[in-house]
Length: 200
Image: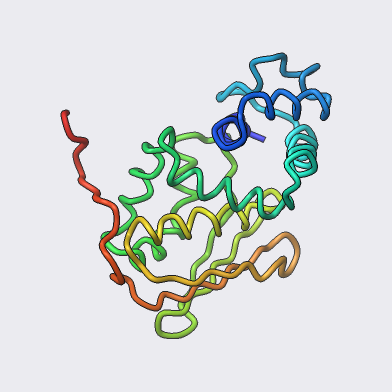
């Protein structure tokens, strides 16, 4: 697992639950013996098993289901103050939430250009009816679909769209499927977004 993903998990837990909780998770999972007190490094690669163990320990210690924790992580990736660059990058996907959905097919390729080792799953969006979409997430690490649900929900709020999302579980093989219903792409005023960063 790429360090950027692990570092995002670390930042989320520290910001949402406190540094003491993160240290306890490292200790109980035994990850402190591998990582030391500083935790994950952003540009390192880690064994997937280490991430799975840390996540399972976090879910147990924080008394949250793994899926709920991953969904909250996805929301944090868009709405957290530390994550503003990622939010801005994704908002370039379209002027409306519906436009953004159609850009998801290219997300894996764009992320590969920026960080070749990141290993995001293949995403495939299809419109099944007017305002209704199905997002397939293939060949990703287990649970990535729940991260996507959280991120998409936060992005819908960012755009001001009225959207209902539902994780439909695992389909064939490692595929996860998310149902998306866009009831109103401009339901209320979203967060301000400018192409240029103010003050630059």
